[in-house]
Length: 89
Image (cartoon, rainbow, N blue to C red; front, side, top):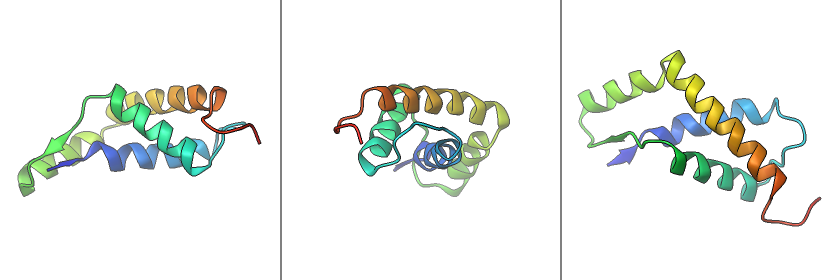
């Protein structure tokens, strides 16, 4: 069983963090952002069947789904940047 949302969120994070100035890109902040997003969104689990995985993967590639996820990822980046779990650099 796998939450297919993890890979999609990571991809969106990688795209957006490169365009976001002032955000920390360390491993701690990245992990915090990804955890925040995955906790705020509905998981997309697949039981491992090819059909189930294909349908979920297709849904996660829709523009509307990716746009909704991008909003949550940007919010998470801003929240974590304003309150990192490490001293300011």
